[in-house]
Image: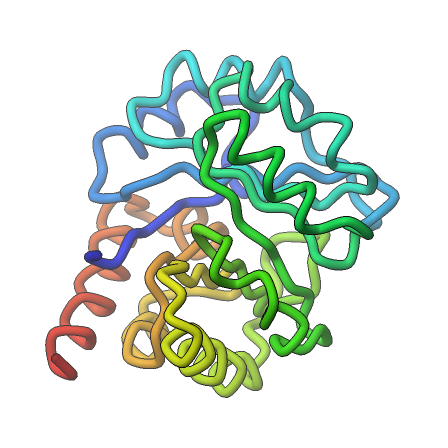
Length: 225
């Protein structure tokens, strides 16, 4: 799979959300990334179903929803109905993770599990073969614009090795602090999907920034093939 850039709409201008969604539609990005926060699992609140449905009506690319919420099982069907195609829940929020992943699949969505920076990848050993993707948080979840945690490179490499050893086809998504400077190294280490928020929406030309991140990532991946 070629590297996918997924701009995080948490960093968009919510006063001009339709404009920013259309910008991503017309860019080299592959997905939209939606950060769903409840003010409990993380200390911030983002947006709910009316906004997700509005985005889905305008988006011409897949919606990837990252649930940073407690009790995500209560809302899975609603995200499917809202138009989400890829859905990740946090390991730390799911006491019955296998059942949650099965429910996501039963609803017809791709299932992912997200790990906070301090959560070891070994906790996914018994479920990684059931996942469509794993989300590695490279910042502490809850707020956009944070700096990349450098230890994430090592964690990414170890996750890639674990997926290969287990025969898992799960894609690896990196979320937090992604930019044109580190995209190449992340792709070389095994990242398939790069979530970029502030780097894109605070750029003077967001579409050029998306292209620059994508070129850096794909060039690096081609170099190691």
